[in-house]
Length: 336
Image 1 (cartoon, one colour):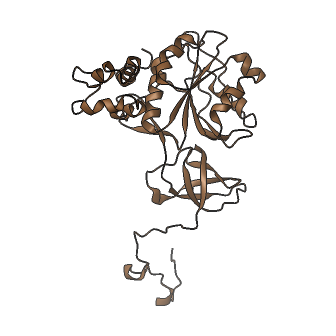
Image 2 (image 1 turned 120 degrees about the vertical axis):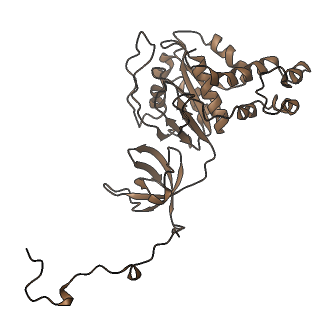
Image 3 (image 1 turned 30 degrees about the vertical axis):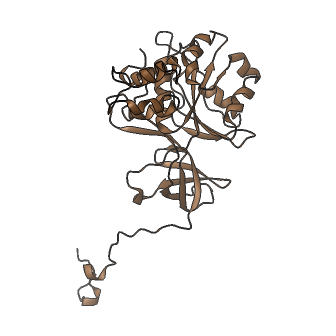
């Protein structure tokens, strides 16, 4: 079949222009100085929901960002359609510098770290006092990740109507971590919310905890406008709940300038990415004592200078025990 007629002319022939006639490629990218500022609220299969001023905008990541991914809590620069109308799509062209990062790996042997939340001020570790039973090793791992990532930790103990909190609080008392104890009845009638909100005011708080501890129930109580489906069943054999929160989501705290970030329920919290030397920064009373430690000291060996530092009365021995327990948690499984 002929593409052209019988009597073709040279002008009828479509030719591809030579390389010299095409626009030259360049590595210079636009600076997007007029880009709007946005906050990433959630990420779902390559689409990012962002808050731009008072509008919720759907966006995608620009190709020039390469493999760098934006996560919940990131402050980003956005261009394109910022109206927030249905079917509109903007483009994230820059991820601003992060002030804190909560990371985890699948397990301690996995070198691939996953950024869970960015720019949070504190990490609320939610654990039930019963049904399911507390998992101190998992709590320890969350604390190590918080210290390493620049977040202040907060313990939220739920279901105090099923078991007293004294034993668990004694375990963490020497870490000077703020805590809130709640019961199921207090969450239902709202009396516990004031105590929790007091710890969240003016801060961005990421909530973590394994399934079934009441984490999402607590978030729903704090942000009633945005109800998330909670875990309805705890396995009687494993003591674990079924995951119902499948993606992290940032929500504005009602009647406050604070934010809460609900994250998926944890089954494990790998610490392959954590440098043990970072954990000592969470112990300002012990840190000066490390000046006499041998190079690359693990702080749990015969030549560690912290033993003498504590013996001289500079710090409480229980604090040194807590430090070494946290450092050792990277060598243990969460369920130990």
